[in-house]
Image (cartoon, rainbow, N blue to C red):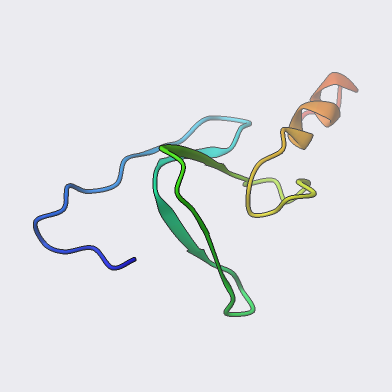
Length: 71
């Protein structure tokens, strides 16, 4: 899914104690070199690595915050 110079830039929203929200569609290259993709209009990328669906956020970061243990 290469971008051409005429494509508008992707918007990424950074949230404290939350995922990165990226306007899609997106391709994500993982550490092992594999690529995962999503054609959704917005995706949430996990930044805490607690997600069972990594790199996609499944809101696992919320469980820890409810216990009173802030990141």
